[in-house]
Image 1 (tube, rainbow, N blue to C red):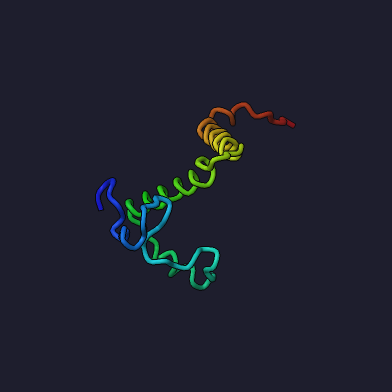
Image 2: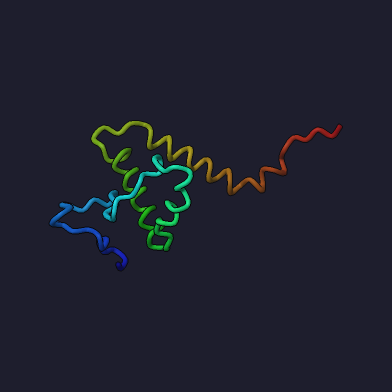
Length: 107
């Protein structure tokens, strides 16, 4: 699978139009239905290669896009999610500078 190609599991005759938010591989047990004793084997079945991680991030991005950004009537939720995400990101990267401005009690 090269960059920009369809997944090897995708078959247009079977699956129809390509959906970037869908996983076309063999279905597995959803994480919410995994028992604690089966958790190790469930994680072992995940694709931990860089292309597998990139594919999972891409599917998550497109699911978020389809759910929040691309409906006909978009609410305020995606804008607040981006706002809170950017606030958290900038807090984390500036934490080293802000921790020196704490108010300490010296008694």
